[in-house]
Image (tube, rainbow, N blue to C red; front, top):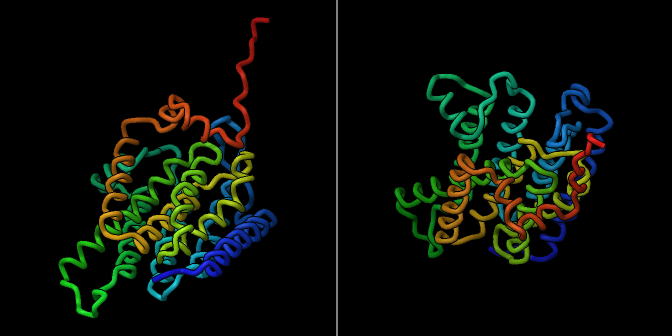
Length: 296
């Protein structure tokens, strides 16, 4: 299946327009009031989570415009909506007094019979990813013959793991202004340039990035779990839709390796110690305030 340039261009335009429009509506009428959506960023300054649901809305509508088939639309809608919904549950319902860090913390709590909002997010996004993968994985071969059930199920599990782990990885990058959006662009751009089945979804991602990046870099908005999980799930689904099995498996291996590494290593410290990554990471961001000499 190929996605023509007009459809990809429409996905970019619609995703960007919806993101901007929804953000404006939310700014005027934030559900529960602005205080509910305000957090403290790495500088200790207030920042809004309203960019997250706005980005998710852009991804949902842009994905529908860019998808080339009914099965692709189902896959993208389920994956993106699951990421957004369960991410928002974690954003708004997390118990700050019993904070669990990373997959290990949430899975450990589940093993003890404790269901945290983060654990609910892991289960919910995982289930949504499997449903999306099932919708995106053809039951028949190109020649019309039916695939063996075991082979189809193996593909669904691998693709579901890629979608879910991509949602988690983008969220791990949403720790500094623009970082998650820049990473999403690096993945989406080559997919969007091609005309494969995932190029329409990748184009929607680029539209959302274009609409959200200014506020994110200005430290007025952040994606939060709702926006970052939705963005990662959309990207993972785009790869599942448009890439052959070896590429999907290689992508899964890379994403899982980075996820496991994040349990031991700080991405921020690695970026700060790597000149190229540090330069890209700082593009468009406010400079770090120099320390104040209080001895003078």
